[in-house]
Image (cartoon, rainbow, N blue to C red; front, side, top):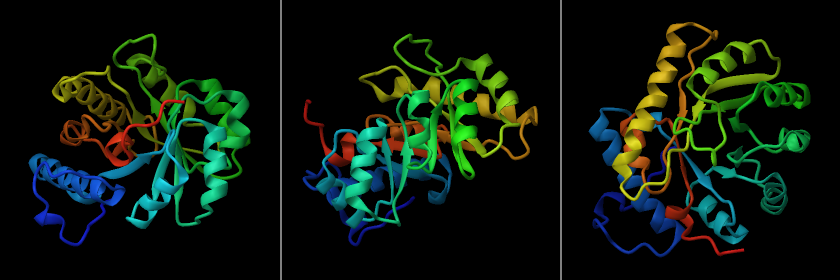
Length: 245
């Protein structure tokens, strides 16, 4: 979702941002420039604000500033925040590792599960969902053991198995690259995810193309947009560093 603010184009590069609304102005300017550089349209990129460890008052500030989609990594934390916020205009994505014993609760909270990484999880989601549930497959392109997700071949195989499950709308893919100080080093991983989606779409494994690519976070979302991201997941750049728990 593109958010436009009054005075947006007059903000000076590098200006200090101290509030959620001001931080969003800076992010929107960077989104705009990245979209222009890549020859894309603003409507092609959606922003999911990651609220893991973020206080409810800051989430409400983000809602006041125009944000409508939020992402959480833990089901219980999401439940507590959703109960306090109570906004029908707000939707939630699950962006953490989902355990099967949390599926029943998760399907009632989230519009999209971005981190499906096994057939057994997809099958449980299909069983528990009461209506169409949007999902993404999490792909581990780095091979890091510390990250969840299927590998490239596993993604192709999983797509072929998931398409026949009821109640699931497979929309595309999500990935998390290794942590780099230089955002440009994330580029090969984002290019690889885009090419994987293109390869799967050429095989016509699904009835509709899998066009959603969730990739890019606070430190590298501009690179992700240039490589085809349709969903960017930003937390720290909006809300600041989370307090250590």
